Amino acid sequence: MNVSQCRIIFSLAVVLSHTATAMTLKSNTKTNPELPEAKKQKISDKAMTLNGYDPDFIGVKIPLPGFSENLNLANDLLQKPSSEAFDSTGAWREYIHYSVATNKARRQPICVALNIDQKLTKQTTRCDTWKVDREIGGEYQLNNNYYRNNDWDKGHMARRSTSSWGLTDEDAQVASDETMYYSNSCLQHKDLNRGEWKAIEDWIADLKDDSNDMVSTFSGPIFGHVDVPTRFIGSPPAEIPAAFFKVLCYLDQNKELATRAFIYLQDGESLKGKQGYTEEDHTMYKVSTEQVEKETGLIFPEQLRTSNPIEGLTLLAPGSNDSLFSATGGKSTPGIGVPADRVTSGVFIAAANLNPSGRKESGREWVSIANYGPDDIDLEGWTLDDGAAKRDPLRLSGGLASGETTLLSDLKDESGGCIVLMNSKGKLVLKNAGGEAVSTVEWTETHDGEVSIFNPV
Image (cartoon, rainbow, N blue to C red; front, top):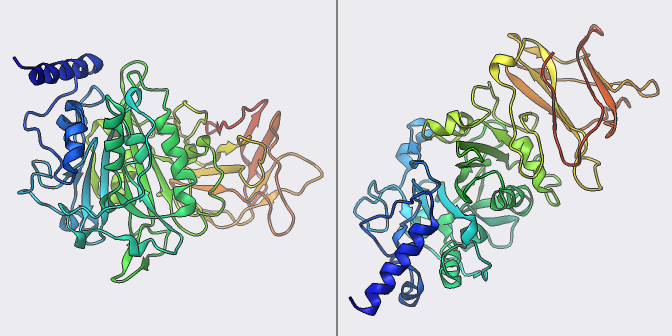
């Protein structure tokens, strides 16, 4: 046995001993044809052997999502079954640690699946040279012309710094550089990309709920959302995503599969004040896995539905006036929705952000109201009262359909009515148009950055 063979065997032994979850190494090892030859020589056996997303990475098998006929997704999917750069189905272009399914009509990803090893993550240098992936084809990617001199960032779907992991610093740097493809980016507004999207990615990178430092994520754009107008940019015109989704899965402290899902809108109203958000703020954007499937046309494995605590809720797609209330806040405490079998009929105060993290709370407090009754509700004449005699109650308006939630972020109405959310002790009373109290919640203390969940009564 020569020295080179010994080194290869040693490298594989280190990989297998490090991974208690017994990661499956592919036997048909392929090198990335886009990698410069010098980098191919540097990268370790582990990075070279893990071709793209590994379904066995976290310790249980999480297959890549499928594609339904909904939203013309199956027809828009780019497939290259004869290309060695793609997986065996021809649908997923494989990079280091991640894989991309491409929407050939919109020239942006459908979904990007990424494996994250928190123990092997390293500091790397950002290479700002974006590349067109020749394996996918330039005609199916948006080049820099679409991002120049405007408010749209090249939004990474597989985040560069989170993908920067490997056995050596050189491995991590190569993995970092491999995220700089247009095929891995979407038209993402700068305020979202540098605000709440960054916040959720920071939270995932520092996730403390997992038991083995292994996390897998699925990210991508949402097009044609009912609450966001369709917009185009550039020539030939490219459609701007209406929203973005992120699904993550990991083994929790009990070594059970846990899944969390999020949707972030990209409309003018939702983008107001995005910058400066902290990592706790993502909790108000949690959704069920089924909701992501409905919005995207992706088909996730069944275990990603049942291991999401919001599974079983009747949810409305998040909109400029609609938000989910399933959240508990905290840096590493997953949100818990109200299970369907615990929800009674009627309208109730579902949740509130009583004590946003940081010093500036103004504009970041909110109250969520849900309607789990059988009938649609006209909120005209309804009020929300904090019990203070010196203040008129907040007057509500609009409608609330059965199974819908609404987010009240403007806590002062045009006639001067308002509510004040106290940090230490407070009360809210929701009254219908007849002045009857239909929901009352009270609290004695709050914690910084923690969203309060109220059981329906």
